[in-house]
Length: 191
Image (cartoon, rainbow, N blue to C red):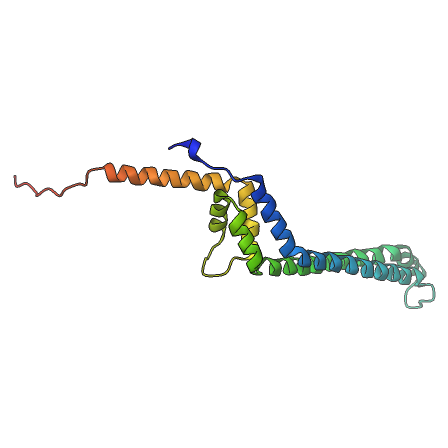
C-alpha cells in the first residue's frame, strides 16, 4: 500500500462547502435568531409584569389566615413569584429550543439547488468529491443541505484520507486473493 498516493483535499474545498452551506441555511438561521430575540424580549416584559403583580399583592386583608400565616406568606411571596418566573423561563426556553431545532432540521432536509450543485461539481477536488459522494446516502434522493453539512464535517475530520486508505486496502486484498491458487476438490481416499 503506497501512502504517497493519498491525495489531500484543498482548503478551498472546505471554504466552498462553508460558503454554500451559509447561503443555503442563512434564512433558517436568521428566522431562528429573530424568533429567539423576539420571544426573549416578550418574555422579559411579561416576567417584569408578573413580578410587579406579585410584589403588589398584599395579604394583610386576608381574614382566612391567621396573623402568623399572613406574615409568613407575605415574607415568602417574592420567592414564590421568582420560582414561578424560573419555571416559566425553563418551559419557554425548552419550547424555543424545540422550535429552533425544527427550523434548522427542516433547512437540513432542503435539496441543494442546481446552481450550488454545479458549483460543487466544478470546483471540488477529487478527494472532496469522494467525501461528498460518501455523505450522499441514499442516492435515490436529491443531494440535501444535511449531506453537504456532513461532507464538510467529515472533510475537516480526515474522511478523504480514510476513504483513500480503504480503497487501497481493498485493492490490495483483491489482488492477494487473485494471486492465491484456487483450491481443488480431492476425491476421498478409500482406506
